[in-house]
Length: 446
Image 1 (cartoon, rainbow, N blue to C red):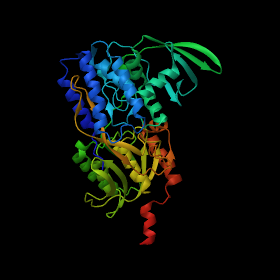
Image 2 (cartoon, rainbow, N blue to C red):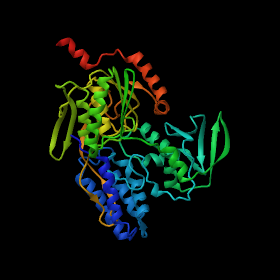
Image 3 (cartoon, helix red, strand yellow):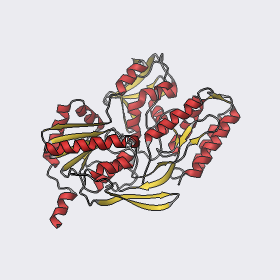
Image 4 (cartoon, helix red, strand yellow):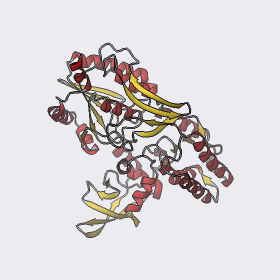
């Protein structure tokens, strides 16, 4: 049903803004025209723009933006203004994603090379509260700004529908860049900290953009396979539709190797997978189910009406893997990757490990058209359909929940060392390896 290709969105965004690079400052009338166009197009295309917030609230946000257009403005400042006042009203596939980025992915070109940023990986966010390190000291303020207000503003730049836990994870991982984009840089960050009812002051030195980038960026491959005895780890970091042929070649080779080495326990890691195309998801499922598999994907409401969807075989596979299956997911498991988690969990094909996925089971997707503001040339996204998929839990407003909880920090720590990760897999197998899945249960009725 879905056909969002996230990478295509990024390519279009980059191309369009490259075309408009010659002009970066716009007159008030031009900016107001773009605001009117932005909101009118969203209302025209989106199947239910006011799903999360009433129309009056969205229109008030629009008027707030227009009231602040009193002088010519740089494109970046305009994008920041629009996103600060509108992001929180719309789903993850709708709205302007130029200034603060998509799902926490902030472009380095937004940050000056000489800037001094808040040091990364030194805070944690728990239920909207900032802490130093792993939660030992509560942060009350940073450079005179109340910590709870900082978190509230950062939550507002993230889309509607996401649980606050997901938003806080995103804030924690992107705090340095978010703080810079919102409040600027600082050579020193003065923190007011509370511990055991005692309030103290401390200072942290600002760091360079390169230091932040090195701390939050890790080299990843699109796909990878590691086999240790009878355990295999298949890593799928993207479902990018433009990599479909490469993905098929990888899966053909990997599943053959898994068969040859008599793998009994297969772990598939989609914890860093931000989505892509469901055609890629369907291909992977074809390698994990019997030839006659057929089960509910969900239903969609689009301009073509209401339609149901099922997962079923689309590609011929010589010998799919039908052994024990485990899925690794995290709050970064998004869009098509979340669809994959839903398929595995709700069909009882395998055991899902990690934490809640990003979007709720009832959400919006399928970005439609090239929505380009007429003057600034900024590209904005708009979902064209409402999608409801089974989640395996009692709350459709949440993402896909794991069967086995593993905090993202613990999972990331395991993944830093292959030996440690496979030892963790062994503990999972010892506890859950005998649990029957649907394929095994159905054999009873043959």
